[in-house]
Image 1: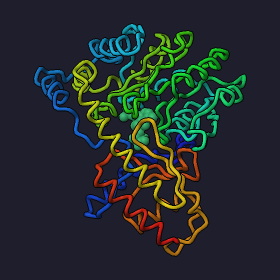
Image 2: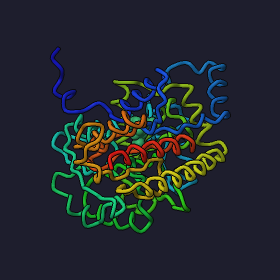
Image 3: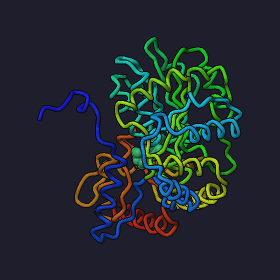
Image 4: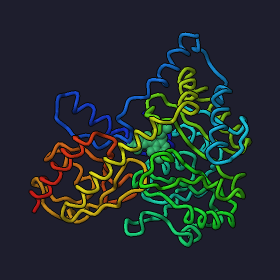
Length: 397
Ligand code: PMP
Ligand code: GLU
């Protein structure tokens, strides 16, 4: 079979592939600790499910407006007005099949072949491949744990070229959990003010933040950027709704309608009754979100403590999201399980075979020295997984 060149420039999503592998192993009865999935283990709050059931009962089973039903687009604009004082019209909102789809549509709508897309690295696996699928050129800015996995304004300035078309901001970020403070974000926004590029702000982890950290929208901090910023968000993480596939983009009407045109020729609308559920998520009481975040915070504390106690492993204490990205470079070059550990992928493989713990190797996130652990799982599982990893490391000596 001759495949398109386009399909050959990208890799399958490693996060989804390993999450599926973990599920399959567990289904075979293997006692695996699953640290792969970037999805809350909590159930979707009942009121949200009820809203979907009610919508089905009422016959909400037909196509909707490609851009999403009006009351949901309205709920999105109201959220941004209430939470950030930002005024968007319903024509500046596109509802898609998850935040990922909203990002994909915008990349397709706004990136041309040869356009450079600046992506701070480590980065969520899909940004670079979405850029490539649009013919764009990912330009990575490498960050390290010692700098909190955050870029400086100077580094951002240094990455700008005449071909720069977009800058991807993801704070709090996947896979590191790093987030930019008010002042850091303001400083980055000053650099962005000087360059005519798009800002693609993926705010999907905005609510999953710890220790009193405050999330800021870059558009609210620097309104001069509004006309060239697209905000991405989703109900997946904040409301434990990953399977519902509802996310959105918010930005200038021209960008939104170009993305909607692409969506109209591919998936059409996001699922009708899931859109109704998303209204309930956004506009209803927000108590469950805080309860889930409180749980995530306990889990983060436990996992960071356990990782810090492992000799040779370093790990940033993240401000948000539900991932840690420990550095395992001290294990590289060592013999383990009869094999030399040559890469983060080998370390993940060793933890899987030796300890029955599955994490995600750092390579596809742009780091050969780290592995990603999702702690969106119970305290017991975290305890068990860390004990197993610690024992596997002790065996290496
Ligand atoms: N952005 C980031 C940074 C993510 O980690 C994810 C995880 N899936 C997404 C976007 C997309 O999420 P979804 O499509 O479920 O809204
Ligand atoms: N974003 C989540 C993760 O990184 C879900 C999988 C995906 O869409 O990449 O694990």
